[in-house]
Image (cartoon, rainbow, N blue to C red; front, side, top):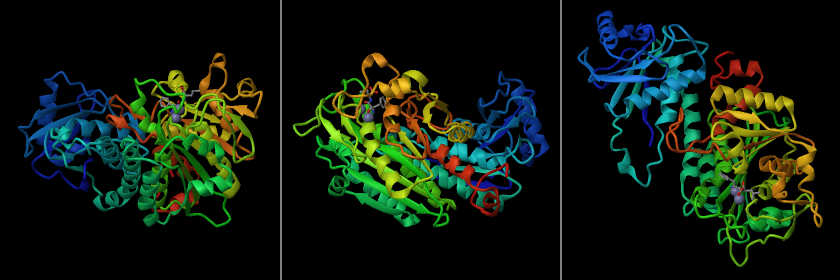
Length: 511
Ligand code: BES
Ligand code: ZN
Ligand code: ZN
């Protein structure tokens, strides 16, 4: 579920809740002027009598005796006239949604045009985007739990309704793409398996002009993808690899490729995981979910760029046909791997998927995204995804997008010491290093690096950020869709500036 009607209006309609901003010095944001000076003064006086001080992102609601509304929500805007980033505005939007969702069916937000200092072309767009992202909830199997949420219409006041409605489409498209990622990641593994996820990709993306090819096990066998197939061999669910291509750029332009780990359930295989948190391994296809969402955003907003997405989908199960520790597999690259833990399966799947995409598409950049290691959660918690890359420039660009979108990433090292630790006596490499090496996220990244040839490459380990049990800024519980907005922003920033200016569907406020 998410708030279905987000619209823009010149002045707040009657009834429902009214939202106004208030600074720490007690000034009501000038966006509320549309209500008339008398009401603004009354609200300011009322708030002054309470213990609410307008702290940024905090809010306070009361039953209204002013004007024609049932409730008023005042949202803290912090220091008077402070400059807001796009992300601050999204966070304010999210806080507005949280503040009003249980009050009334409708809320009108009188914040914007003149009282927000920012580089955004229209701050209301970011407020609306933040509210929309925050409102998504996975309630498919328990719709009653949201009975308390009353809000279904959220309107934002602006002096320029037509422009706002037009410009908001691109934000709405990104939100829809994030919601697609969140929803496939949230679905349990008895619903999402390689076959059903490939079908969703086809349904969602083919109508948008994305080419989809789905490789079945026979094709993968012919290609020599034995590392990926080895992970899948214990499961009754066959593996699939979905190859998605969006040709928005010149035919001669090399594409940017994204490769997502799509382990639809990771039991650990024969190296079975302990019971405690095994149920969370339905999220182990989050990398593929992000690739799916990202391609949807790219196609909906028609980015003038060539993009390839790979969803490498398997289920990792123990059985009589499952792969064993000690097995040796030959990857598509020809390099051999000695399996030490069948639970270090993500890197095996990625090894073949990455080799395939470099061979078939000669991309200028490969970015893989994967819930790869528990060790990254130890290192970076739930605050940052781990970034590993062979390119300082790529690191800079991705970190910039992370900071801008709030999907933050932290660069981790790649070194020869960790690379050596995966050498095997009997094959080219091991799929895990000795436990004494520690740094498990780094050895995993070193493993993947061995399958990168001559291309700028980044690996995002999203094991700690793909789901949340806390209320984080634009998310409630569950799947975050982390990576869709980040990588979309990264692609948008890659576009030449003349292209940004001439395309009505791009968002860059500083352009
Ligand atoms: N899917 C897991 C990683 C994971 C852990 C994701 C926690 C999300 C939350 C991955 O396949 C895995 O099991 N990795 C092992 C590697 C080890 C056996 C070398 C791990 O991190 O323990
Ligand atoms: Zn595993
Ligand atoms: Zn896994």
